[in-house]
Image (cartoon, rainbow, N blue to C red):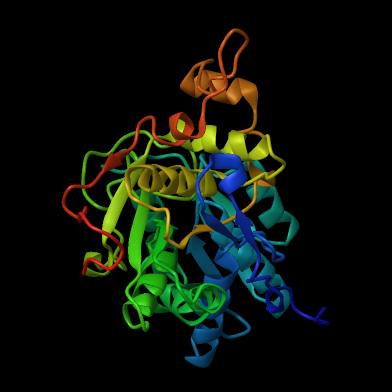
Length: 350
């Protein structure tokens, strides 16, 4: 094992879980939660901060500021503490309590926004708040994960090559869509690779990232209440939208087999299993990216009263007198495929 002196110097990038025994279909889940920040956001945070340092944007007086639903804020809190910067995270009421407490424990300041934007989300209000603070004090340095090319660059340079080394015959890759940093970095890398790879973006119902009607979203991580500035749909072969109830079911199915993953992972797994169920996947090599682990969701998607209040007492389908749902029922109950980007045919149909 390496000997390190900074938290961002360690990341386990080659751990995969074969989900066949749990869901009945072959899917390799790339686990991105094994670093000190506990999520894939450590990669983007590291690249964005180091780029700002190289460009001379950060000085000892600087105050890092960023809008985050949780995971990026935790990663930036660790890097800021390690490098001696102050950090202010602007989040909203959907941010998990454990993530807020982690940031504060690391010495960061957390501001929680309660006002909704025009699309019924918090993102626009969070960004307006960040811009107002930056205009009021020149010490603030906004990394802007939504527009920063080092967000997708981190995954072009690190995440995608890790997958390519492990799976040289990769056919299809499932990537959750938030800022689309992970999605665009991986998609750009595999567009240049020696063989075609089908890129399937997995979004949450209620997100407007790929168009569509805005709706309630209670699970942080994936989805956007505006079109992601980093998104270039020409690199995406297909978009699948997942209902939050299906996200929850997938998470609990994994947990019943000893794997506690976060909500974003449940969304990606649910969407991937739906895709595999309607395509001839017998000879395909399929990989999905799991952005984080589940400990930060113990008081939400793994908490019975929270689930019942928001989704009803039958959301898990495993109450007394009910049969346990089979894999296809768990993952394909309420998913929609975007007809604008859905292309028929196998992974080589380009």
